[in-house]
Each structure stands twice: as C-alpha cells, then as structure tokens.
Length: 327
Image (cartoon, rainbow, N blue to C red; front, side):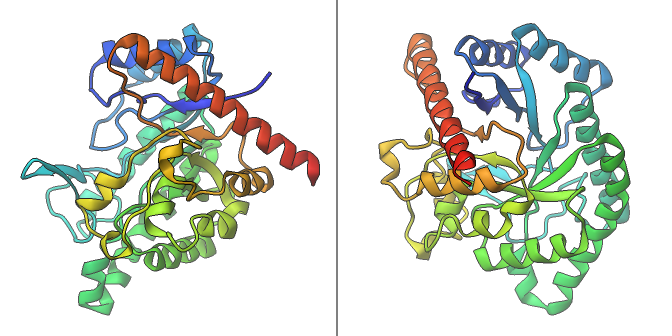
C-alpha cells in the first residue's frame, strides 16, 4: 500500500479545535496514511497532557499515524506590517518569553521547557522526530563577532539540557532550512551543530520550497550535504525569487507558496527525481511529509485538491521506493 503524509494544517492555522478536527478528518478521508502535526508551530502555547491525549485519540479515531511534529521555537516571527506579512528573523527580539536562544537565562530555560513540551507531545502521539526552526539573527551577527558566539553559547546550553530528555523519549530534533536567511549562514550553523551533537539527537529537515528561495543556485544543496541526518521533510513547490530579494522579510514570505510538489506553477526549479534519490538514501522513516497550503473556493473543491495532493504524495513515495530498489 502506498504511504503518504501531509501537514495537519493544510488549510488553515486557526487555534480552533473544530477546524483542527475538520482538517484531520479530511486528511484521513482523502486517503492519507500519515500526518505531520504542525498546529501551534509558532508561538508559546503549551499543550496540557489532556490535549496530548486528545491529539492522540483524534488521530487514532481517523486511522492516521503521527509521523513527525513541528515544534515551536517560541514567540511570533510572522507578523503583519502595513497589511503585508513580515518575517522577523534577522535581529534579536525582546518580546519573546520562551526562546531557547535567549541571552536571558529565565527566557532561555522557558524556551527549553517549550521544547520539552513538544517532545512530550511526540511521545503521546507516536511521532519520532520534531522539526525545529533556529532563526539566525544574521544582521545582529554582523554587528560584532562576539554576538555570534553569545548566541551559540546559549543555543548549545539549551541543547545540552534538551539532549538527554529527547534521547530518553526516543525523539530526534530536526533543524529546518529557513527563508530570509543567507544560505551561507545556515550552512555554518548546520555544520557547527552537527559537529557538536550526534545523530541520535540532532538532524535535519529539508524544506524544498525554502531551498528554492535561499539556494536558487542549487535547491538540493543542503539535502545532498546533510541527507545522512535527514529525519523530516517539508516538501512543497515554490516559484523562484530574484536573488537580490531572497533575504527580504516581506518578499520571501510572499514567495513561499506551499504548492503541492510537482505543481507546474513551480516552473520546474526542483528536480524531484534528485530529491527522491537523496530521501531514499536518508535514515528518514517513510513517507516523506508534504507541507502544503490547500484552499479551494468551496469545501468540495478543497477536498478534491486534497485528494489530488494525496495522489502526488503516493507518486513521490513510489519514486523513493524505485530509488531504493536501484541501490
């Protein structure tokens, strides 16, 4: 039986159980076998144990398996400014109360508590990995060399505390390649973190759409380099962006389309055969997760598009199996 996985918030991120349940029911009805739990991927919301059981029982009632989750790094990075979405990432912010990278020790520890909360969610629902953003305040780094070292000192302090908790739970943390951040900064971060932490704890999430925006020269660059640590995916299709704009916090969000993979609107910028090749070589538990946005003018159209997405996910799953068979 072909396997397939899609994000639990494929239609909206409303903080509303009716909408959450509607989307999860649709995912199951459309024929998906797995989901990545992405609700509350941003912000400082803490799941109570009863809510974790609620998520578990919701998925069980639909016959869906929890594949991975998307953890929150704390705070709101996506905000509205002058009617447009703006991605806050290049500076240090003081309005975040749970931030595992913070120089304030109490705020940093609260950020670790938030990550432990998401590891607990993984344990309750049977997910093996959690995706995590590590926003790199790269403009702040450029102001003084000591800023970078202060940042990573706090990050590593947090990860040192988190590591035994995650290992005891059997959950891996998978850092995601991001938008609006120079790819060179991201590569330096991945190299530094993967050199310090072993693969039983820390790995990589490949976001194909983000890769198109930040690594236009080679969208598979990170996937190729870090495939041996690949524990999660966000597979989506995006259009390209002028390289002069790919660190702009408004333009990058506007271009982060989250179309279904292999959508013709993407212009063929991603070689999906190559993506399947490296996914097949990775220690990733199949299926690979799609991270898409599906709207539709009516509920019927939304569901039809979701079924179309499931067929593409099954196609990609078969592509990966063919690559595995060819090794």
